[in-house]
Every structure is written in structure tokens, then in C-alpha cells.
Amino acid sequence: MSGSGIDRAFERRLATFVNAREAGVLQRGLKGVERESLRVSPAGHIEQSAHPIALGSALAHEHITTDYSEALIELVTPPFAETWELLQYLCDLHQFVYRHLPDQLLWAASMPCIVEGDESIPIATYGRSNIGQMKEVYRRGLGFRYGRLMQAISGVHFNYSFPQRFWPVLAEAMQARKADRNFISEQYFALLRNYRRFGWLILYLFGNSPALCSSFVKGRDHDLQTLSPGTLFDPYATSLRMSDLGYRNKNQAGVQISVNSLSEYVRDLSAAVSTPHPEYQKIGVKVNGEYRQLNANLLQIENEYYSYIRPKRVARSGEHPSEALKRGGVEYVEFRALDVSAFDPVGVNQNKLRFLEAFAALCVLKQSDPIGASEQVHLDANHAIVARRGREPGLKLNRNNRPIELRAWAMELIDSMRGICELLDEGEASRPYTAALELQESKVQDPALTPSARTLDELRSSGESFAQLALRMSHLHKAYFVELYPPNEQRLAEFATEAEDSLRKQAEIEAADTMTFDQFLAQYFRQ
Image 1 (cartoon, rainbow, N blue to C red):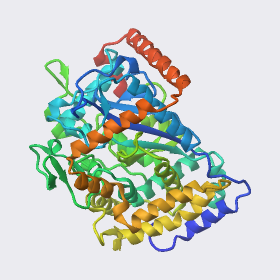
Image 2 (spheres, rainbow, N blue to C red):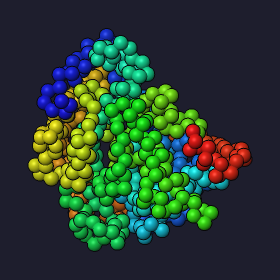
Image 3 (tube, helix red, strand yellow):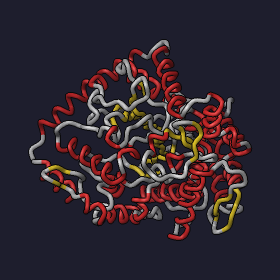
Image 4 (cartoon, rainbow, N blue to C red):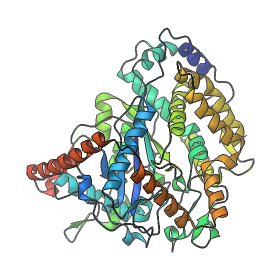
């Protein structure tokens, strides 16, 4: 069974890679990052101003956009083969953004700054084009469905695809006839299933939202404890962001999307975006001539489905994500459960990215049986328990209907990754992947080394509230980017050109519209 005891299939597959005729078959997989961050005032309140025009069009800019809120900036890197290149690009992006945020900060933490309820969170706007209006109405719908506060949480998404040379070796290891598109998609879905089984480890190792500002839950029921005035926490929490207080909301409990195959995944997503939901029907779709949501279905569009990890393919213009997957198969996976690293100016670091790359290989190489409904319940529960209680001494999880201590299971997974990290380190004297793995192993041995424990320790020793600590880190990060020398002027100039081009592109999109918004929506959902 997947996840228990000795996995002979995994050992056989790993041996094939170790003995591969070609060196470095695991190296230079493509990596990209999407980093979200709230724009806040110097005092730590959410910004009400529009997305700065000098940053370009949030609709048409590939690398600087907004997520749910007008104040929630999203920085998107292209894919890179080397982690250092990726982080350099992300660093340059931050430096460019800060040149155009003279008196504002990018919030350093995942959980929001001081908020004054839903109304204080401005919904992002994208201009008057049909596609721009659609993006805004979709966000309006999210606000009605889940509340805007949940949408003000930020995270980091890690996009990853294996190198092309990896697939023929994997096909050989699995005695498959050929490493074609279907084979590759099947293996990515094997990864998705194993991520559902083992992804709780990511929350334990990298979760960094054990506390939050009390303004976030004002007027709502919760069971958090008070750490200090204005700060609530769970003593052993790793990621309140990924708990029932954050993204794992009850509204989507009815959305069950299978990852047993590409066809089942597309089938379930298609059903969810076309099945009316009684609660959402009560909200209404178009009320007094104004759209409240795109439709009253379980999901308005496919992207509304909140999952820890997603199969992806770059979609063509107007193409739905599942249509893109059906057309070309899975191109890469998007890891979505990462909290922002509040101690890193760009919100993420090399050790984390290297570990995730090795973890992706672990999930694809380990035996990955289909997930039945009852197993899925246990897997969801494991994630929920680790989000709220991950550092609890002696904490047990459910593995194949048997209790197992988190620490023991985590060590098994880390031991399985040693050979993978050696393959990733091939030809590197400094062995960066092995070093990244050893760093994570130390967190398993000593929970006090986890980011969530470090954050609580900092809150207790400094006497600061959550909002004060995050604001201090935000000011430190801003100073880091403003003082960074020498700046990469060539790239900063490229970003300025991209911003201008994106504004022009938005104007072209708006000028090209020939149908009404009602017609546009009808056509989009007919596809």
C-alpha cells in the first residue's frame, strides 16, 4: 500500500535513475514562483488606493498583477532551470515594485494586516473590457460566497515541471512502452495523489501562520487562544492559513475532485462548474442590473476550487484550464499550500524550493494507488490536524487506517529522499539539495526549529502583537530592497517597458470588444 512500510516499487524506480546511462536526468527541471503580498500603509492597514499605474496593467502584465484584492499584488516569475536565477528574478521584481510604492509596504506575512471587516478589502478591478469585467465579477462572487477576509490571505505558489530527459528513464523504470503525453499526465496525477498523502509534511516544515491579528476573526466564532492583546494563536499550529480558519472552508466541502486520472479530474471539475448550488442561488446572479457572481453553480469557474496542488497547462486565449489539460496533457504542477516566509524578503528561499523539487520527485517515484472516498477523508483530516496541531508532542496521523506518529512518518519520507537529493546534487561539490534536506530533517527532530515555532518565539520574546511583528518585518524587507546595491538596471528597465506595454495591451483588448458583457459571458460558458 502507498505510504506504509517498505515501498519496493520506489526502490526499484530510484535504482533505475541511479544507474541511468545519462547523468543529471533529474536536474534542471523548470521552476517558477507566484508570490502574493498585500499593499499596506506605513501603519499596517490595508491600502485602499488603486494598483499603481507605474506597475502596468493588472489585466495584461505577465509578471506583476493583482489577486483577489486591488491591494493584493501578485508577482509571477517565468520558469527557470536554476533556483538562484528564479530568486534573482523575484528579487528584481520586488525592487522594481518598491521603486513605485514610495510610502507603502508589502506585507511580510500570510495572514492579513489590521482589517476592518469585509468592507475594508477592495476588490481588484481590471478595466472595462469583457474579460476585465469577468475577473471583477468573479471576485465579487467569491466575496459573497466566502467573505472577502479569506481572500486577503496571501501565499506562495511553486510551479514545477520535470526535465524532458526524466520521462524516458521513468518509463523504463515503470516498464512502460513509451514516454508519451498520456504517460506523462498519468505520472503527474500519481504525484498529485501522493501529495494528498504526504503533503501534510509541507505544512509542518514550512507553515508560518501559527498566529493572526484578532481583527481577522472579529465577530466570528473561533477556538483560538489569546497570545497577547490583539493576537490570537494555536499553541501547536503550523499554518492557520491552510486550516478551517483560512482556505479549508466548509463551503467547499461538497466539492470532491478526483485525481485518480486526468479524465476523472476533468469530469469532476466540469460537474462542479455546471451544478447549481442552493446557497449561491439565494445570493442571486444579476440583481437590479448588477452582477453579484458569474453564476450560482458550486464553482463559478474552475479556478475557484481551492486545492493544495493543481495540474496545469498554459491555456490558450479564452480556453478553460480543463480544456487545456485535455488538449495537451499536464505540463507542470502548482504547489499551493506554501505560507509566505516572513523571515525572507522575497517570501521564499532556496532551501525550501530545493526541498520541494526533491519532494515532487518523491511523490512521482513512490507507489501511488488510486484514492478511494474513505482514504480521501483520512488524507484531508491529516492535513487539517497538522495545520492546527502539527507541533504537538507525540501527534499521530492516520496512515492506511492505522495511527502513526508524525515524526516517525516524516523521518521515513525524509530518508526516502536522500537518494533523490544525491541525484539532484550530481556534479555539485556543495551538495545543496542534501543540505536542504538535512535542514528539514533537523526541524522534524526538533519542532522548535520550524518557522511556526520561530514566529511564536519571536512574538513572545519581543512582546509584539502579530500585526506589530509583521509590520516590523515589512519595514525591514522594504529597507533591504531599497538599499540593495548595485540594482540590476537592465532588468528594471525591462520591467518598466513591460509595464508600459501592458497598459497599451489593455487598451487594445478594450477596443477590440464587439459584444455586450452578457453575450460574452454566455459564450464563455457555452464552450
